[in-house]
Amino acid sequence: MSASPYKQLEQEFKRLHAFRGALALLRWDAAVMMPRGSADVRGEQLAALETEHHALLTAPRVIRLLDRAQANTQGLEDWQIANLHEMRRQRDHAIATPATLVSRLTKAASRAESRWLEARAQGKFEAFAPYLEEVVHLVRDKAALLGQALNLAPYDALVDEFSPGLTTADIDAMFKALSRRLSSLIREAIAEQEVRPALPLTGKFPPAKQRALAVEVMKSVGFPFDRGRLDESEHPFTEGVPGDIRVTTRFDPDDLFSGLLGALHETGHAMYDLGLPQDWRDQPVGRDRGMALEESQSLLIEMIVCRSRPFVRYIQPLLAKHFGTSGPEWDVENIYGHLTRVRRGLIRVDADELTYPLHIMLRYELEKQLLAGELAVRDLPEAWNAGMEERLGIRPANDVEGCLQDIHWAVGSFGYFPSYALGAVIAAQLYESLRADVQGLDEQLARGEFSGFFAWLRTNVHGLGAKVPVQELLRGATGKPLSATSFMRYVEAKYLETPASSSAAA
Image (cartoon, rainbow, N blue to C red; front, side, top):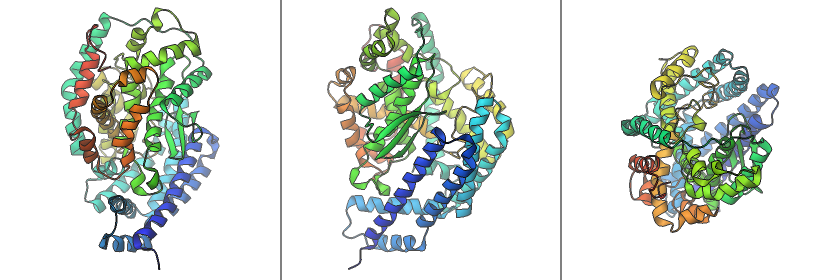
């Protein structure tokens, strides 16, 4: 007796999962290990695998099996029905984009990533601009085709790839809600911190010792180094599949916390991926539920947990152990003051919780303008600088501080940036419920114990994979749909506290 159409589809998508893993490790290698001169060769390799992955996903056999399986779902369990829905979703996205465009975009992105690295080293955007322009044109073509196939506006079609079910209407509403209060809150927080300035944390912090600290903290968080690793790259990222997770960060010998927080941001991604349902790890329903939720898990660790007093109490003796720190500048309150310092900075990955959304709003507006043809690539540096001045009152001194700081556009990830701001909002909403449900959470975190924290997340977020939409997941975990209310309540309590106030929000 032959297998059912659904069971045959499971085998097809298991093969596709293996391709995804191979592609992920090739991309990791390109950023961490590959010689710069090998970019064109790697581009050919990636394009070949992407094209084959696309051919498998859009094959007539897969389409016939999907039609037959969806025509008769009797006897299928909830997870299988959800898996079938995700299979169809992947197929619909893939079939809208011709294989030739997939290949051209993959090669162009590989070239652009290599030139982006060179341009950062030289501090010259103009060396990168022609390669970015090629990517923009190809992404514009892809967005038009996707939008037509999915009955979405072109930019919404790109957002849907990264954050399924969310649109520019959702993003605009969220940014409007955040904008109403953030600018004044930033001013108030800075004024309050100027009354009680933190003592400077002086010294040299060798990258090797920073790495040792990061590894120790990652182990406490629960990162399994027998199934993952930490490396350095120009831009921190996470790649791989749940059984083989690659995390990167970058260390600055003059900044103790930048590399650590980068590593822990990426560890948040890794822990989400590792917590996905084991029984479905090689199926579409076993994947993450989009990048807004992915970023919520990284920002929940980096921004909320790692910038809290309980975490500082845990890490303070580790700083002394690795760097020999001592004195009043290294007490809990002073370290906490540094980790929660609000300042109008130029670099997104080093931004605090209050200014971070403003960085994302700028990128969101610029990438929409680039794709709509309203902004020429050659004019991007000035548009970026003007936008930073308008939103944060500061202007980059060079392109490395400006439009060359992120890798996303070089690799064609247009539509990704909104997921960071949405992720910050989701993180606060989840954390509010997590704190209410996990008794003694502060005491656990102060001891470096994360088991209760992640047990709640595995039950309410990680273990659901892609079974339910984000809004349904949030209602189940928090009892509420996506809203900026929890985020604003959290940041106001944390950044406008009085010296004697409770540390609960922190």
